[in-house]
Length: 295
Image (tube, one colour):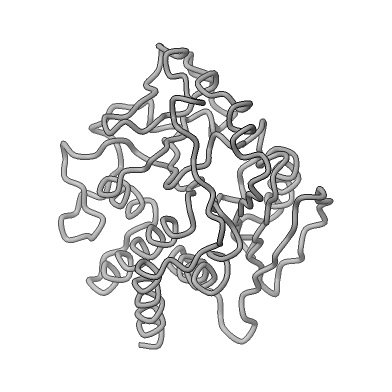
């Protein structure tokens, strides 16, 4: 009962924030799409969705135009990663070493590292524009390593302080390793990544939630794309609404005795709330698999 009350209070706060918008002052506006996005340079792939959102592939964007636009705007980008016991193990240090080099180079970055009492902060040398903020899970409270509790923890911190500290925020899996720059081209109101494996598979096999009783239910014949949960981002308000909606959907499913995943609820959310920018599978490819010809 205690968990239900906490989730209700967090959700009520999110609803108020949607009206009040108490976010970082001096909000950063996005550049006109035609000024930096060149979809005709990649006729071999889908570069624009049916709702006219850009799909980013190598060669479709101008980082120089984006750098000129954001220069001198005091842009701050946040990156959240969980490093709790049993979640990502030693991978998180490798993730952070690569992120220091490749995540938003030349921009102010705040790395939000979520730790518990079992996990030592990684030893990573930061650049002059980068900083760490360690968010500790309470020692007095057991930490079930579940997606639902992670969502609740992140939503609480977004509400309490993160929303006022960054202009854009990404949440990423600590098992990723950056192989190249993840730069200004990825910034947007609501950013989702096309699942690196399922993008190339037949749509009938896509693992949407098919149980009609689930809050994440997507009927056969519906669905735009299958999105991965390893990378999601956007403006703090939009990301907060996404995470809070997924969390509440998982709670309602649990109350009905349905076990559902964050990824299933994420895909339902993005079907109803179209992302404004999509990252191609290039942004999260597993190098254990052969590269497709589109790369």
